[in-house]
Structures are given as C-alpha cells and as structure tokens.
Length: 217
Image (tube, rainbow, N blue to C red; front, side, top):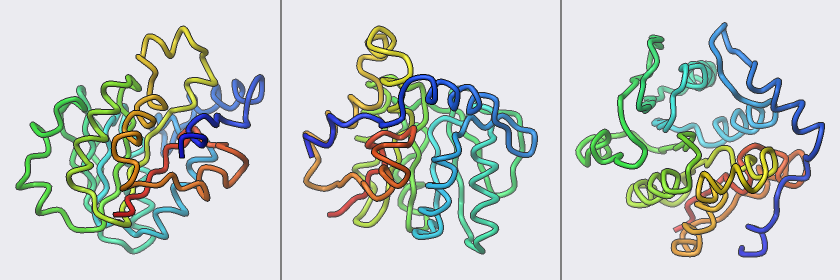
C-alpha cells in the first residue's frame, strides 16, 4: 500500500487544468457543484453498488453536491438520510438533506454519539472540507470509530498536488493526499484503497487520488 500511495494521477498538464476549469464552473440544477465528470461517474457506480442508507458530507459549499447525491439516491429508490456539514451552511433547501453548521476538526460537536448510533446502515462518508491535512486527518480519525466493514469514506481533492504544485500543498500541510498516507500508516490494516474506482478511467484519473477507502475489518 505504501507504494500505491506514491502514485499520483495519470492526468496531468494542460488537460488536467482545462478539466479543472470546467469543474469549477459546473452546476447541477443551477447550483454550483464543483464536481468533475470522472467522479460524478464513479460516485454513481459506487452509490448504486453500496446503496447507503446514510450519506455524510463534510463540506457543503453551495449545496450542489448534496442536491446531486439526494437526487441520485432518490432515482435509485433508496431511502437515504443525508447530513451535510459546513462552517457556513448553504441557504439552499433540499428534501432529505439536513445541513449542519460544523467544523471538520470537531465533528463530535455536530455528530454526537447518540446521532451516529441511530443512523441507518450502510454509511457512506465524503470528506470535502478545506483540503488541509489536519482537517482531513481529523475527519478520517472521527469516522474510523464509526465505520464498519464494507462501508466507504471518500477523501476528495488529493488532486491538488498535481494541480497546484508543492508550494500550494505545503500551505495545506500536505493536503488530503498526505492525510490519507498518515491515516493508513496507522490504520491501514482496516482499510484498502479501492483501486477499481481510483483507476477506472486510468491510474488515479479522479480528483480523489487514492481516496476511495473501503473499510475491510
């Protein structure tokens, strides 16, 4: 797994920059969503496979991705509870989605034990907060207590290493990719990188570089 963590995205240079430009202008039902075409496709396949009854999103931004996830689950006929957390929750109202004010570095304040224990399974978690290594690591460690074998946590935007270079990533203390590496060094016996998803379109042709993590025990 250590060798795998050294693997970046095969998608580089001008093509990557152009897709990122489109990603940052992408909307769903008129709401800014900031999702690239690769991960929209990968999420759809994973959601159909897993059919989660609870989806937890860390980082709501404008609410577009929560809206998209809610519509996907509805179209699949899955009764899914969605909790989306942000320091500044969006003003959008989405049926089936509860937006919370909260901090990825202090999730216990927003997702207390009694709430977590009551959530229907399976649970699917998306970590898409501020991309700082410490935040991502805090999110991973929080959900490590709650996830069970077969459930997923997706760590978004490890692609920042390839998009913006070392100086930008240094300001994030290594960013999401470094957080995944540190987490798996400690807890890797309980998780695996789903390379079938990460490499579906080519080696790590996803913004979630080495970021589709499946709990295995």
